[in-house]
Length: 287
Image (cartoon, rainbow, N blue to C red; front, top):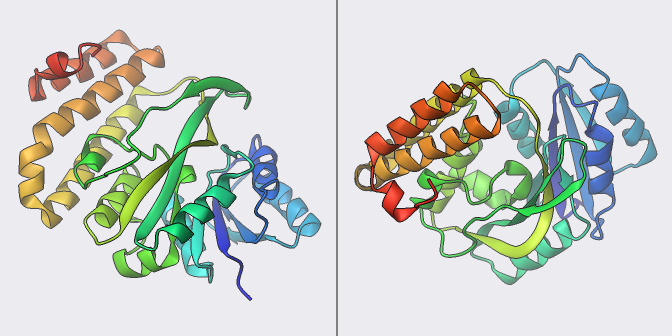
């Protein structure tokens, strides 16, 4: 008999944090799940660590493949699953103990709910609590909300009915950035609802440092999201594009300043955010 959940964990050179992440899954108060760790061509001890847990707990399954990227890796886990629900966790994040239990209750009570998510707490790079909770919309989500921001924040925070993937499709393997928002946008355009729980159920590990090139790749990924969304809902994109672009560029500016990158990088994003929609400083004076 298939478990209620399949937990899909892509892992690429994740040896530094993998044990903590796996332990957070195995410590769930709801225990009817399989954990599929997919080693995406790691060159460190990721596979060794995952194999150790596979021997210790029959719920842990280890799959290995050459490096294919996170979208293809998640899709492999989706296709492997025979469960009603699929949950995801990246190999450096941590679930809190009632994560699966509360999402199961949420989904079982709401048959029209395709995706459940929750609030997120930021963790230090060493995995310690910060007490800082991400702000994001939890209810009454519409497709355009996934153009302005990602209310779920990370794929580690979503639990999805398998039926949703069968109807809407999986993650777009041509996308390296914003692939989660692309998937969520497609779901939001379907008959399935997406709704969050007013509970903190995930610890999201922040990392120090960063490269300006990564931020510009994130911008490119967002523009790819928009182009794909435009093919589905041209009038929606026409209405929301400039304001949504301004929001995204402001987010990248804030991230550049937070990462202590060259000031010119943050200023570039901020100037272009104002050029796209200068009224963002009226709507959100803290810009």
